[in-house]
Image (cartoon, rainbow, N blue to C red):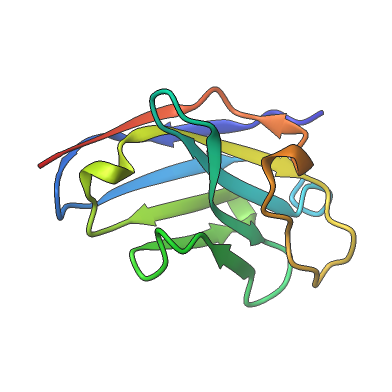
Length: 129
């Protein structure tokens, strides 16, 4: 197990931006970092995942956030950021960061939440129109 710590979140106006941070130590072991979100009364869904080992890192995004959200990372501080722009009320949710080991250093990370073993506590994002 590894400790997963999220920060950021809060409130924004529609069209605005927020950035979430996820700190997961031992990046060479836990290469896959995933961001998921859970809207009120709905199942947890994928937002974006990143293999933080290679340069450049390998990221994948859900269709609903492509072109608006971007992942970045700094392995020196074991941190992955989720930069969210052009926010809409549909982005209102609790956002969770998760980590898992990766099979190969240059593999794509899985997008299913069931593949992730370690989770943070979640951080709330609220977007008002």
